[in-house]
Length: 288
Image (cartoon, rainbow, N blue to C red; front, side, top):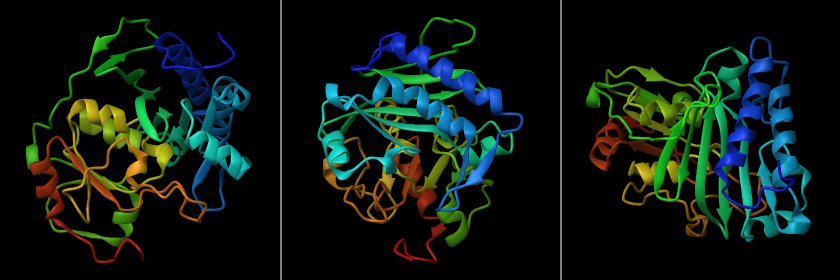
């Protein structure tokens, strides 16, 4: 394997995700876990997977940068600004869904996005328990099982057969602060990868939540190619897209750095997303 991942190389990405998945599964039965300063969970597997990607994706001398959940705080402001404005910045969540991972639920995965001059151009997510790698390849979506050495197949999103009566996946903020007036079953999995993959495969009908950049960087290009709108809950006419220049993430050096400015809702189409949004009563404002 090359020492530096400088472009969206499917063969190299496949090998990296397979190695990362093996690391995650090695610890899955009993992952050593601890709490970070924000009281979110981190495991030894998170750290080891980020170490793996760091070896290939963090080479500032060659203008290849990594914004990773577990290591971004170790970089100075010069590095971060260079990364944001570079032609090759990898955005990694080594395990998105560390909470379900830490209690042996399958709704977690590894997320990687390629950002070029603040635009996320390509994305990939790998769900090791399901052994499914879903990624963009130009304007196409491809999927394959890594451990069975299957060929790439074109991915076609599926819509929940339950329609607007289907299950809703939500993040922790709306779960704690908002009220839902529908009879839909609600799942709070603490995983963008799990929630979005279950949405794209027709297992849930919508997702509502907030996140940081690394939670969603691998998914935004996938959602764009799938034509699934990702909408602001406060201004649903404004989509969250792959261009970070549109100021929808906090990128300045503040305590909220990397966080999406406003929670989002997404579904297979805009009318479905708006229907679910109408059932959400935001009993606390986002700023609270």
